[in-house]
Image 1: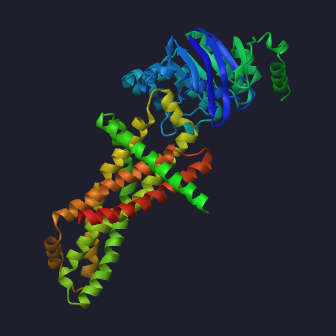
Image 2 (image 1 turned 60 degrees about the horizontal axis):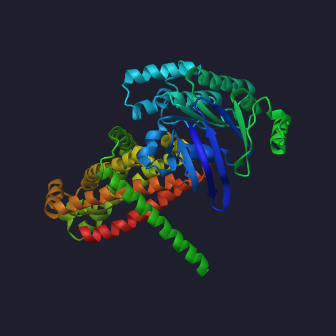
Image 3 (image 1 turned 90 degrees about the vertical axis):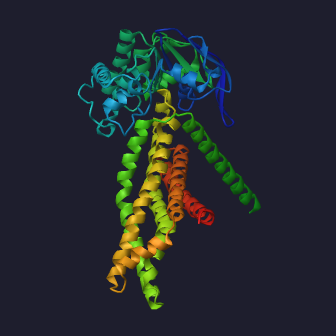
Length: 243
Length: 253
C-alpha cells in the first residue's frame, strides 16, 4: 500500500506539489491526469524516492521513504518498476542486457536465469526475438515495450508509468494499454499511471485523479469522469476529446 | 562590471566546491570498496583501445619534432653526444605526460562527458537510480579508476615511442651515434624523472575523468546542453592540466 500524507514540493519559487495526500491499495490501478507541467511526473519521482518532498511523508508498506537512508531506499526500490516517458533504455546495452539489468545487478541471477527471464518478459510484451537488438534499432513503440519488459523483469509489486502512450500512434497506444491491463490482471501489480491520453485513462484505470494547482481533485472512475461535477476535470476531458 | 565579476567569482567557487565534494565522495566510496570491477575492466579496455592510436601518433611526431630542433642546435655547438639525454629528459618529464593528457582529454574526456551528459538528458541516469544503482558507483567510479590507472600506461608507452622516434630523426642527420644517444640518456635520466612523469600521468588521468564526469552529471537538458558540457569539460580539463603540470614540475623535479 502507498500512502502519501500532505506532501509539498517546490522547484525554486514554483510550488509544484501543494499539501497533496493520496492512498493507493495493493493491486489498484490509478491514473493521474493533468496539464503539462502540473507536477504529475514529479509525484511519481517523489513516490520512488528520485526526489524528496519539502514536507510531508510518503509511506510504502508503512515504511516512510522520506526518513530512509540511501541504502534503505535502494532496497525499497526493488519493489518498484518504473516505465519512463522516454523509455530511458541504456543505449550502450542491447535489449537482453537492458531487460536483465536489475536481475544481473541487484539479484545476482546467473546468465542462464537472466536469459530465461528476459525471454519470458519479452514474450509478455510481444517482443520475442529482439534480445540482440540495440535500442537505436527500435521504433518508439518497441522501446516502450522493452521499457515495460525491463520494468517488470524482477516482478515488482508496484509499477509507475510515466506517460506510457504519449507520442505513440493509436494502434501502438492501444497495444500498450492492453499490456498494462494484462500485466495488472496476470501479476496483480499496483499501477500508477501518469498520462494525458484519454483512451489510456479510460482503458487502464479504476480510479482517476486530476492534478490541479499541486493538489489532487476528488477521484473519478472511467464511468463518472465524463459527467464530473468538477469543471476542471470536465474541461480537461472535453479538451482531450476535441484534440 | 564589479557585480558581474562578483557573480563569476561566486559561480567559480561554487563549481570548485561541488567538484571537490564529488571527488571526496568518490574517494570515500573507493575506500569503502564500492568498486564495480566488471565496469572498471570494461572501461579500461574501451578507453585503452580508443586512446592507443592517437597517443602513439602524437608521441611519435612530438618526439621527432623535438629531436629535429635539438639535433640541429646541439650539433652546431658540438654537443651531439648529449642529444639522446636531452630528448629523454624532455620526453619523460614534460612532453609525454603533458601531450598524452591533452589528447586524452580531447578523446576520452569528451567521450565521458558526452556519454554521461546524454544519459542524463535521456533519463538513463534516473533509470539507473530507479533500479537501485548509484550512478557514482556504477558509472563514475569505473571511469575514474580506468582513466587514473590507464594514463600511466599510456604515458609509459608515449615515453618509449617519443624517445625512439627522436632517435630515428637523430640518426637521419647522419652525425649522431646511436650508442651515444642511448648512453647519454642512461647518464642523464634518473629514476625520479621516470617516476615523476608517471605520477603526473596518474593525476592527469584522475583530473580529466573527474572534471568530465562532473560536467556530464551537470548537463542541462537537450542536445545543446550535451554539446556545451562536452566542450566545457575539454576546456576546463586542458586548463587544469597545464596549471597542475607547472606545479608538479616544480615539486617533482
